[in-house]
Length: 371
Image (tube, rainbow, N blue to C red):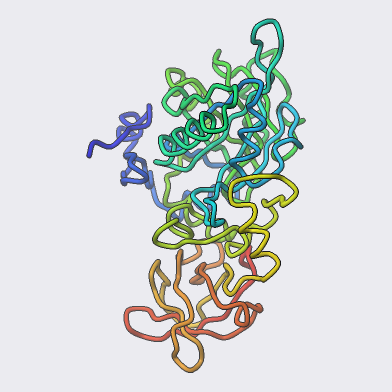
């Protein structure tokens, strides 16, 4: 299968980046070192090329209805420029993906204005989600347009304590002051002469922005941040999000390999049961009954690095769970992991073991973000 390439793939290669396949894309995994890039984001600022993320636009008289029925959060709470985190679930409540939904400025159509949205599927999910939205729109006879614009937009994440000022300084003269944006809000702003969607969102636990710019303007916009930030790959993005306890679609949950609901994945806050969405009834039943397992942090107390797929056992050696994500934390200099455990084993401090290369390593349940 031919891998999809971000617009700056060759420029990253010239910079010395190493690449990996992720979600069907050929993406930089590191430029200098994962640890150095991770530290830059925690202490200063780093820029990630995340153009592998999907972009789907939905606009029309019934756009709000369609978005409300296919995501778990309350889309009607959004005004233009607002954003929210949400899950996309099947009828049985199992997550297909998680996403950020943006309310765009209203569009002009036939002399009137209609609502417009942008949502961000994870890497490799854009075609699937576009098809899902179109199928349900047609099934429900709704009036709206659904556009897969993934390869119209490049996407960069500028993250770290120094990132907000750097992005604000990069906005062209006469553009808005993006420092006025609160978290989970966004606006259009000119950067390097291109109209960009600038959102105060991210996946690192640090302050910063995610910037969507036209595909053909990717080089000029990237260069705005190159001098003041460290270029970062997906390796550091992974270690940063694990430290925060953030989910990775396809690894911490997967509809076949790791079928989980938002309540099991500990993101029940994105479920609004007062709205009518696909999977709502199943999730209402689960909330009433409670979950048997939930997503937790795990800290190793012995030497070793927990990896995806490693067994978690109780004090008697019985397998009680599996590591879904794990790493040696660059910030904390200790091995940490994420995974699902029975609810009676999820109190912080509960002792468990992780089987690392056939050896049981002492571990404990930990709060996330890890400390």
